[in-house]
Image 1 (cartoon, rainbow, N blue to C red):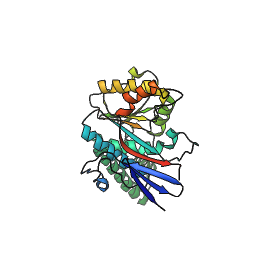
Image 2: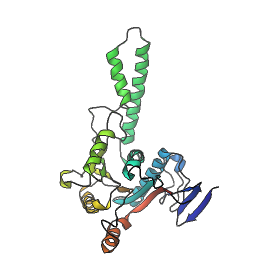
Image 3: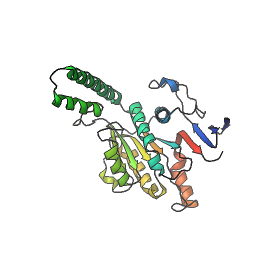
Image 4: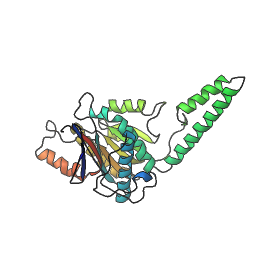
Length: 289
């Protein structure tokens, strides 16, 4: 039995013993990159996504629309949590795959020249596959060239020595350890995100990070313990990054009783930071049935 509840622009669907809610809060009549979701109305519920990829695309579409509407220095919030209270993994760990897909989709939507770069990589892969098939049909194999072509295909056509020269999408992790793992796993041989993405941590010495070329800034699962650092990074990015279009908080948890409390400190943090965020996508499974 499916029961729909429409209240305060939240779309809740009950399925069996859990509930799922999702909504998009901004709109644009024509989003040419993804025609399937072209008709989105502000504050209105949308259908539930068909898959994790679909959810990431919807979140990216909505965030890109919001960036177009505000022009520059927009602050958005995306909440995606389907764990239903399962604490086997941390929220950062359980939402990593969504984050990879969301970052990629939003970068392709907003970064100038990135779509062309992707098309070039796809053509390189297609050409490598065609050449590899031709080599396999030859009577005298060229193992060295075959290995080179297989390497090109496994990298998705991305050149190993080619660096991105355009604007940067920066992802801030709660700590340096998580950022280091992302540098290894997200940008390895089997890259999960475009090469315009760079990684930093909320802790550490922020003055060492050059943010002047940042166009999109993500805060991935920032916690209450990093709230001071997050505010410092925000101020610095908005002051120094001349190309900055959008700042996105993904699954933020910036108010905690044990750290900020719910008194004056927590209230001031909400007024300075949290209340200024515009929710562009929300999908969360609820434990009540």
